[in-house]
Length: 179
Image 1 (tube, rainbow, N blue to C red):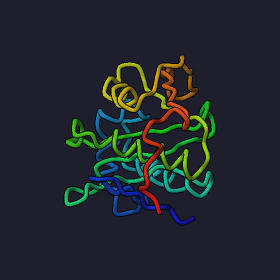
Image 2: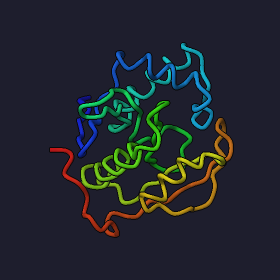
Image 3: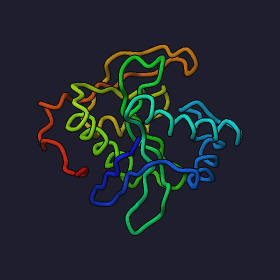
Image 4: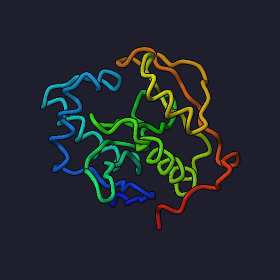
């Protein structure tokens, strides 16, 4: 599976690789990971990184590592996610410590949504946000998503569903980040 590379004005979304493990492990060891299945020890973080890479092969899409052009690398993980047990395909984002509040999650998630709609032909998408994760809810709101009920996940517990606009309702017509 060749994982496509996307670019936005400030960001590069690229394939996850083993060189991303240290920032990935630091994120999953932190309290920030409580909203996405953590905290985890290094072995658990390694399994999560392997799952993210494997998701591309199994589903034909997945989440990208986010780098800042002319800036830091491995600032987060953003993209498309639909593992077993998910109610629908999701656009998800995890920013690593020190990278929040800069608009990276929104910018990368908009690129991922455009890819899902324009390349993969998705007609809808959701984002799952755990109660209390106000920063992620704000990203969903900035993307135009609206609350659409709740979902009880077997392992993650209760999550709020945010429904993204369908492709025909997006004013900018998508982006040309992929070529």
